[in-house]
Amino acid sequence: EAEVAQSPRYKITEKSQAVAFWCDPISGHATLYWYRQILGQGPELLVQFQDESVVDDSQLPKDRFSAERLKGVDSTLKIQPAELGDSAMYLCASSFRGLQETQYFGPGTRLLVL
Amino acid sequence: KNEVEQSPQNLTAQEGEFITINCSYSVGISALHWLQQHPGGGIVSLFMLSSGKKKHGRLIATINIQEKHSSLHITASHPRDSAVYICANAGKSTFGDGTTLTVKP
Image (cartoon, rainbow over all chains, first blue to last red; front, top):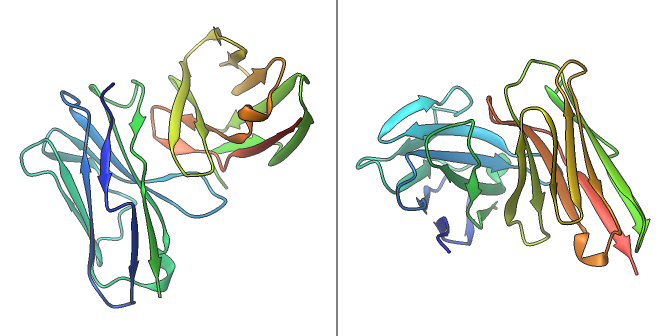
């Protein structure tokens, strides 16, 4: 069964360093989402792509976060510089066409900033 | 205030009990998503519904659009049902904070 792949699964970094996460959605899924989940809370949408275009990045802290999906397939989320408050689980999800369809989640990247 | 509110926050049940988790939302939605998150962090989609009721095995999800309310029911609960259950406004990708369910044998 097709799955959303994410790497790394765990990342420990020091504050002020740069960190990057990678996501490969299910083949054929046009919509890709990046979420941040702080312990004890639900996921928070950071950015939504439709193919290679950003559809919604209203909650993305653009002074330090960036996301790209250059060829409309896999995607990278970057944080530079990382801050202590960025420690969280970063989840990637994909759906066939858009928000009204079932989202399939990857295993997530757990980030710890020291 | 979160647009999507869940209750209870935590729920402990004995194996075999009938369980209900509630979800209320403050803005109109076109579809609501119920998800299950296991301790390792993996999230699995359970239901996407926009009206009425859906059933899958021991899980039942209902939604009342007029009342802006949805419920997730688990019949004959089992320890393997222990997880965090999250509801989300599928149209806006906004999520509740989850209900942590623990089913004891």
